Image 1 (tube, helix red, strand yellow):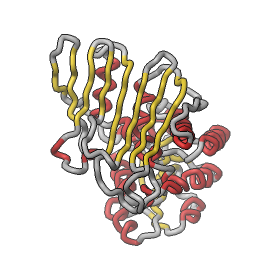
Image 2: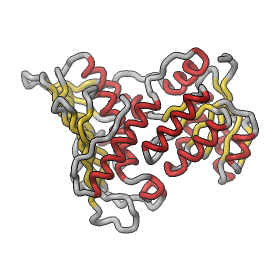
Image 3: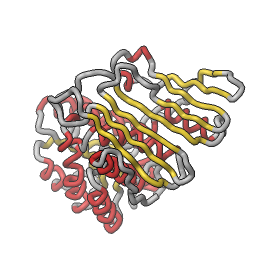
Image 4: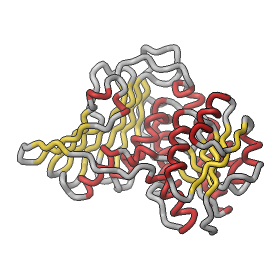
Length: 341
């Protein structure tokens, strides 16, 4: 494949679109040539960073213009499948915001289309590059807490959810699909054992102005007895740690940084390493090279170097979340998803 500069188009331009715009600017081998949004103010914001980019208000026109090699799709989740299929069918590489789609059937169709066309399909699993998670994985890989057998992750608090698409189950896929796309991906990147089954529970008790669950929990049981849970709550007056991980020789706890105020997810967790002798050590975060994901896109497209994040991984996350939603409808009855890993 040619090593010419990769022409990038951004489909929908909100806060995450701005992040991608900055990343393209900072990544050698990439250039932003097109951006599409129906909001003129957002197009102006994009041009403030990439003034030479061509703007569109119609996504089909942007995809048909022949001016991009890769499109970053940041539309709401229920449209990911449609726009990814449109792009792949036109010979355009695709980066999707999470989740890949809302069903495994849609994911499998997109992956097959990408494979048959020799194109890249990948999800921007940006939380895989968070400093706290990178540090946790490094500690585990180094054997600092022995063999992991219990893994908990949590996000949320007690707050009225917004009324935007994030809180509409028909658009977002539900509370499990929202943050679960990140945290379940982290679990699968940490626990390599075969997954036996998944159970899910959704609580709808207070916030009736939206359709997402107020409190959602997913439990993953692996074939060797390892247990992992993810909880997303808007009813947690007392927050659990972001991470609580037990191993045979110690534990890792990731507490929310109070400096973040109410926006706890905006800062990495404060990590403490608990050793088997009772000592506790606060662990400094490992440094993470900014925009590593985008640099890996260039390396893959131009040189065929494998990416840390793959479509198969993100597809399996969708399979788990879909199984959790199915389980929740049956009040937590375990469901065994079909994974590709």
